[in-house]
Every structure is written in structure tokens, then in C-alpha cells.
Length: 298
Image (cartoon, rainbow, N blue to C red; front, side):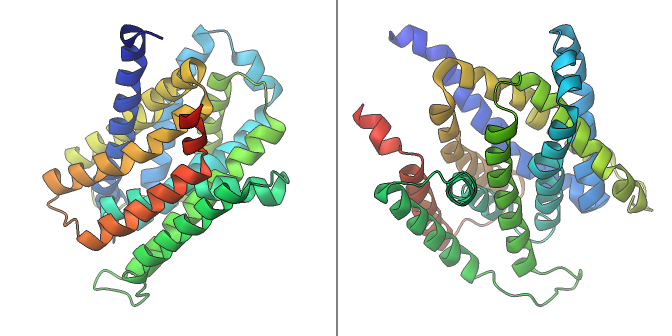
């Protein structure tokens, strides 16, 4: 492949990392005024409205109709619950910390596939899992306080919420592989957002804020719904078609980098050496769990 042919997908790859890195910033701005469940509910609802016309334009509505039960359930575990967890976490921890914890998604994915699908990893992959989870333990250790602060939230529960979200992503990956293989990706993406919207609608309305959110909070949720969910899904599946799932998953390494930069520039968040050390351990473990070194040799 010539350098000129590589350039378009590399641009899309970096753009996807930048967009998903920004999702933590936008969700933090939204959750501060809307609360966790309304933030998550609006995110998936806006994404569903954005993706549905694309689905119908490409004539994939029949695929969604055929598999809607499984796809809607996937939406709860792949979007509804994780987005609510991150919105809750971002009310008490930094965007950079939550993004570093999010980098463990491939680790949880490999672990769930091992337990559920009997997809036993080789020794190098097991080593990656161990290194990655040690990095998580090191990173979470300094945030392990479950004592509520003045707002009634605790950083310890925020870390737990991020890890629950990552576990949900891992379960969703194995669920998709087992029950939705061969279903058009746009049908899965759109249907999952519809399913998540239906699942979060009542809790979001029940916990809707009494004070009117600012225009900044509304714009943040519009951005996270359209850009960080709708557009990002389109880019994600385009990359899978171009370079394969394994290469596309390496975007995991770019997301924390952009999230740390956004948090530093726009929110004045502190990036500590300890976060960088632990983040390096997590990313190295993730690289091993994704067989990136094996891919590089080939």
C-alpha cells in the first residue's frame, strides 16, 4: 500500500481518536447540570435521531427489524449503562482519569471472551491482561476513597462506575460476536442507540433537573450525541471495513491522549506523573492483549 493510499484512513483514524477523546469533556459539561441519567439518555437519543435517517437511506431497516430484540438489548449494555456510568463518574473525577480507565476496554473484552466464549488467550495475551489490570489497580489506588465529598459524591465510586462501563463494553463485544455476527453494522449501531434510548427514557425523565440547564450544557450534549456518538460510529465502522477490527481497536491508545489534552486546556485539569506511569502500564497491557506486537511482526 502506497503512502498516498494510507493517508485517508490515517486521517480518519486520528479524527476518531480526537472525537472520542472529546466525549469525556462534553459529558462532564453536560452531567454537571443535567445529572448522570438525563445526560446519558439525551446522548443516545440524539445519536439515534442522527443515525436513523442514514439507516433508512441505506435500506438497512429490514435488518434492524429482523434482529431488533438482540440489538436493543445490546444497546443497554453497550451504550445505556456505560454512558450513564461515565456521566456519573465525570461528576467527581477528571476527564483524563476516566479516559485512562476507559483504555481497559480491550482487557475486559479479552477476559469476557475467555470466560464466555472459551476464547483462551495465549501466554503473551495473559501477560497483557495482568499488566493492564495492575496498571488499573495502581491508578485507582489513589482514588480509592469512598467517603462522600461536599456534593455527596466520591471518587472511589466514580472509578468503580468507569470499570463497570468497561466490563459492559467487554460483555457487549462477546454478545455481538455470538448473536449478531453478519448483521449490517449500521443497523446494529442505530438499533443499539434506539434500544438505549428506550431503556433510559423513564429514568432520565424522572431525574430531569429542576433548574433549567444552560446553553453550554445543551450544546455539549448535542456535540456528544451527534459528533461523539453518531459521526464516531460511522467513522468506526468505515475504518473496520478499510483496515480491519484489530487495527481499528488501536484507537484505544489515542483516546486518553486527546482526553488529557482537552482536560488540561479547557478545564485546567492536572495531569500527574503517577497518572502517566499508570496509564503507560494500562496501554502496554492493552497492546499485548490486542496482539499488536504480533501484528507488527507480520
